[in-house]
Amino acid sequence: MSRVLVLGGTAEARALAVLLDDAGVPFLSSLAGRVSDPRLPVGEVRIGGYGGVAGLAAFLAEAGITAVVDATHPFAATMSAHAVAACSAAGVPLLRLARPGWSDHPDADSWHWVDTHEEAASRAANLAGGAGRVLLTTGRQTLSSYATLLGGRDVTVRVVEPPAEPLPHGWTVVRDRGPYTLDGETALLDGVAVLVTKDSGGSYTSPKLDAARTLGVAVVVVRRPPVLATASVDSPEEAVQWVLR
Ligand code: NAP
Image (cartoon, rainbow, N blue to C red):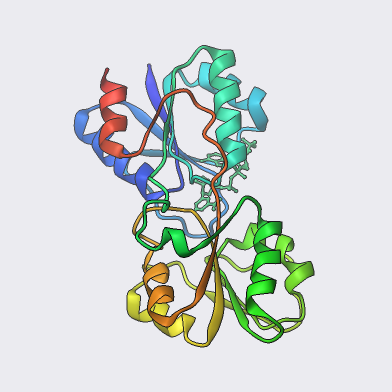
């Protein structure tokens, strides 16, 4: 049996699963298994890592995968790099599907763009001054990059899953998987001096950007890692057309 592997964990991957299902294309979605109660796509789902590039390449052959769509989050850089290497080794076509970033957002020019979380921590510390509150929305896996420079400061961390490691004294954890509304984000950002975010893109997590503008909160944005795949699209509709071709 030949089928498409969708590397998922995003709303775009779930939308693509619906489109592939509607088009009658055999496919399998894959999740990392990091979230305790994940939103599942329609169709068959496989949960857990492959054991690196060699494991993924072996899986592609064993499972009869004839095309891969990497629809993981724009910041899931390791999985995307593994997909490029494994598909190249196995001779399987690969498409990258990632929603557009926020660089075209009307407020983007007023944000502080940085390349790494360490740089974001430094910029946030400067912008917040001695006592300003910082809101981190960069994900629990990034928190160690902020602990040294922002430890002991007034920091709120908004995460989906609880952080694995103990956080510095003075940090507050807010657990919320969304959907995020303008009213909710405005309440969360009230009293915050600096918002730190990744350039995740899309509308699901963008209400915080509108709330930040209204409240005059400084915004630090971590740029995306580079796209390594040679073919890439930014919508599930384009991805299903690529699969059908
Ligand atoms: P990552 O750092 O790029 O990947 C680390 C490892 O997790 C990979 O080497 C792979 O393990 C496994 N993995 C990742 N995505 C997988 C998938 N879709 N199916 C099977 N195994 C997967 O990934 P991450 O940033 O931790 O993200 C993990 C998952 O959460 C991804 O599916 C991503 O789409 C989703 N997500 C991430 C973010 C984010 O900000 N990073 C936000 C929302 C959702 P092996 O090497 O063992 O194969």
